[in-house]
Image 1: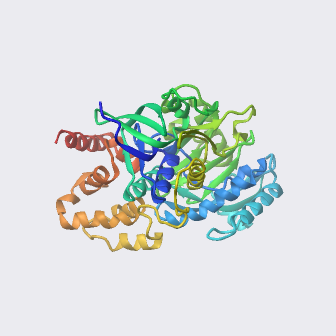
Image 2: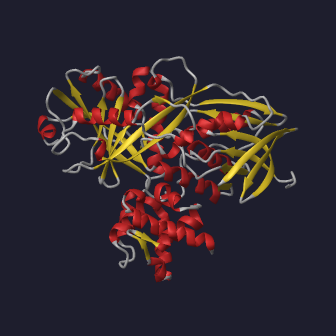
Image 3: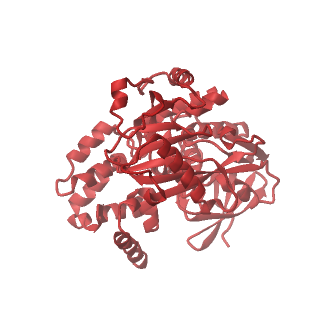
Amino acid sequence: MADKNKHVDLFVIGGGINGAAIARDAIGRGLSVMLAEKNDYASATSSASSKLIHGGLRYLEHFEFSLVREALGERETMLKIAPHLTMPMRFLVPITKDQRRPAWMVWIGLKIYDLLSGHKQMASSGRLSSAEVDQLSRLRKQDLTSVLHYADCWVDDARLVLETLLDARARGADIANQRNVEKIEPAENGYYVHYSQDGHTHIVLARFVVNTGGPWANDVADSTNDTLPRRSLQLVRGSHIVLNMPKPADTTAFTLQNNDGRVIFTIPWQGSKYLVIGTTDQSHTGDPAKAVCTPQERDYLLDCYNRYFAHPGRAATAHDVIWSWAGVRSLVGSDKKSLSKVTRQSKIFAKPCGTGGFVMVYGGKLTTHRRLAEKIMKKLEQMGAKSTPSWTATAPLHGGRYDRETLSQMAENGPDFLPKPIRQRWAFTYGDQIETLFEAVRKNKSQAKLIAPGILKAELHHAVKSEDAKCAQDFLIRRTKLDLTLTPKDKAKVNAWFSKLKRI
């Protein structure tokens, strides 16, 4: 058994977006930080979002103006500090005669959205002309009264988590996946955290512990015999389905009003090769790690899609769904009947322990993760932590030093022996780290060996050495989204590469 001499200022439990943001913020303010993720980074809720950085237009009708304003401010911030991962996207809002929200109501909502955003980097909302509507070849025109538009942002959610963690590591934080917290014991001033890693058990004394376990937050709290300020949770499952992009391909996203009043997005994905449709709001029971899109949720999403769009030749069916995902959000318990009305505002509860303390984090949104971290830092300061002023709003994330135009030019001017599609994909996956990959293949041409279609040896080495990928799934699903594009035979090649690496 390890001794109890190792200590840190802050131990963060959970390698999703909230834990990543807290670790990054804290290390940059001078605290020593460790983070433990029992599986892979972003392996649960944080990689199962709608992949949007947005204000949350629908929250306006619940009068959550402060949440929308905060989220829209963060949308601007993410465009500045993570331009390689965050991309402006136009959303169209078709209005039909039978909808609960008529055009005038949506129009007012969009203008409030514009006002709260401040019009800094994003286009203003508006209405399409009749000629522009006619160009929307797949949108059903029957009963269509108007098509409005507004702007929000798409983001690679899993890589946003990863880049935030890598930024924290570059500043000195001890970050690891496959590190499992097993027990937490109160100490005189803080907590002893017992964790396992690489087959060994370790103990660290942490003055502060922040629990960002998401759906497992209360399970983490159960691992200590201290009485912690836990709250009952509502576990809410959000599911998405993926279709091959119908022809003609469309680069525009749509915000659809469903018959039950919920909002459904259709979002072009991966260079408009695919179309994402989501999300749902369903109560979830059982293990959040085993959440899947149910047949009922799939059909619900398809029904909404088919009501608005003419899929080529016929209605889209379950046979057209090539992939799906589901994530479970943990919301503080509410007696409201509609899950979509339960606030997405984060909830923070803390308990002092001597000169340290334990903080429980519930809920939150992908968009506002950075602001949540700032709130956690204020809470730690109130319990005695010493830190410097906030800093994360202006410092680029790992990989985020260059804007999208510069990255495109870097890809264009990259090694000409690399296929252009690979160079372009690297630019908007790795951002400024494309320089590291280019250097690797220039120095050693064997690094340009093709392991599977579109996947070079250099990229796999980078994923393992610099991004903690432990298996093919880590790389194909979360470090990249190449799992969708490969045949089973090609996926087996990547699996074999990782298996060989483990034997070396």
